[in-house]
Image 1 (cartoon, rainbow, N blue to C red):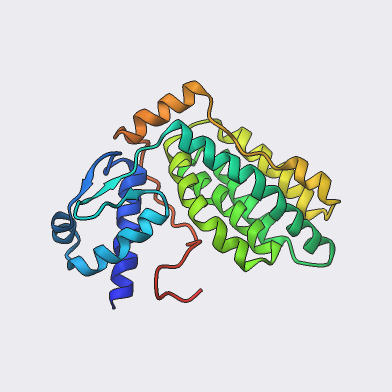
Image 2 (cartoon, rainbow, N blue to C red):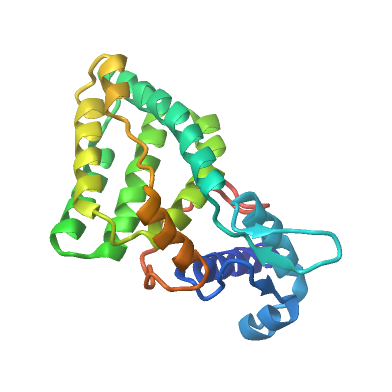
Length: 235
């Protein structure tokens, strides 16, 4: 029961941070959250370390948790790490497809993202675009890589939601090229060249910083597949 409540609290606080209801620098009152969600402090205290691992809150001894600000250096570090790791998993996925692995779930997810772009469904695009990366990781066959990438995806989600209006068609075109390369089972070097981690330029970065400070990008209502289970959940 406590595990289910911890999941509920985690999801609710995560969503509030992503949509700006809990802006950067805001203290999280366990008492207020408990009253609003009708839960005790136990599941809140279980959820907070997981939010910290996701880069969404900062914990300090004997002080309330605080929503972590987004910084330029933090963004650079995130994309530097992704730029190293994502070509590797793409090559692994392509190798498995070449050996006979089924790439249809990846293509189906890409099709859902395409439909969202065509329908101007930004929430749906954010959901399915993120799932493209998840499907590539699953296709790689490396459970350890999925585990390693989980907190990085959480950090990326925060940036993607805040910049949800930024050129979704271009992002989708990049995913199409990547999926075509992987699903065709090409040599690893060709796949690696298709992987691009999008960095935000100065103008986009300042817009993101304003949103992270509390301006809402709009609710993201789709439910994405959880990449990382909470403590006690089965994989």
